[in-house]
Image 1 (cartoon, rainbow, N blue to C red):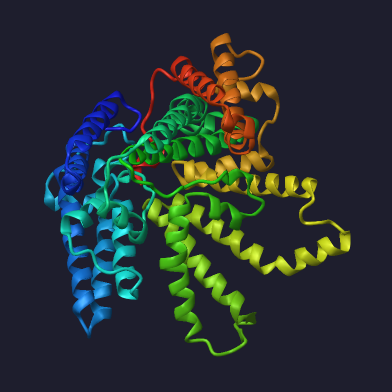
Image 2: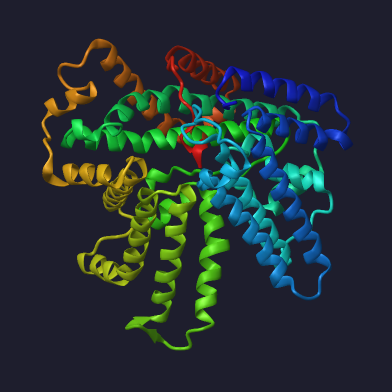
Length: 490
């Protein structure tokens, strides 16, 4: 059941109706039953088995950590280890062959056995660690803890919620009012717009190229790579908007997961704006523990010809980004993608003083608009270069695309004909391209106008006129064959 499908809208409406008529003390149970039913709709019993196992182990670890005066470290690592093992199982479905025949591949684009596992298992790890650190008290209500892990709007693709943010809301569920319903509906419409108008339309240009890269050359591969960057953002952020909108209808506020990431002026800033819940999770539960562990064992100003601070950053970043790649899938393409971003971050940190000194010599102000524009374009280029490895089916395909883009391919307009663009493109294909470009412009401009244009904020009729126009745009220009969400496989 995909969030942009008619079946989900029917399911959401039924769940919302039941939520409205329920008593306050039973609303958690209604949401839990809805979440379990939503997960069961994928037709894979082992998904529910894994969820039950993670919930039971996480609940037990949290309770024992609260009362245990000794061996807390053993309990902590038991909880972490079990959840990591579950994540590994979801990344290697053949390891589950002993539990029965593996379900066939679905429209999700990956084995259904892995749907949502990484997200709720990551939440379970953060919960156990936070209880161990004393950041939060353990949740004594097993049903509410299970709801925290599997709340259906964010189950498939996040955001990866922290216990101190979501659990208090689940303890005080209330009937939502107009101030919840209006932004909830608007977020869902905006998410639909991103998914069915932009992401699915761009997929028609990207997928034919990347499914057989050796039939294409330089400019076609470059255009497909840039379009994939926007396809992935529209697809993933579109899901997040729909998830946040769905949750808001129940009075629950999920974490914002994106903040105009392609407007970043550095790779570090990009990771503060892209998949924010995962980036902060990696920082707090992987990068910081690794660097802290190393710092306690290095008692010198320099280590291996490097300043200790730089060495710690290098090690922590390398481990974090490589594991970030593996988190996305058991493939060398994801490992290389994570390694590339690790290299970006380490290089930026190592050359920071040199770059600042160069700017002072050239008398370039860091807030200069032209300079920031150049930085943004350069950062986006680096991001797209890394996306090649994220999207390519194999390392061989990724190397081919990279070599073609960096100078080995044909960069004439005729090379675009292989992907249905260029001078000979048909009227339908040209119209598709125009709609995609206009929609991309709307996606980039509208959020800023809504936040900054006071007349729009104060004028009710203008807001509703804009909402109606957006709905009409979605209805008229949604693609006929909508695909599954790209991140559903992670």
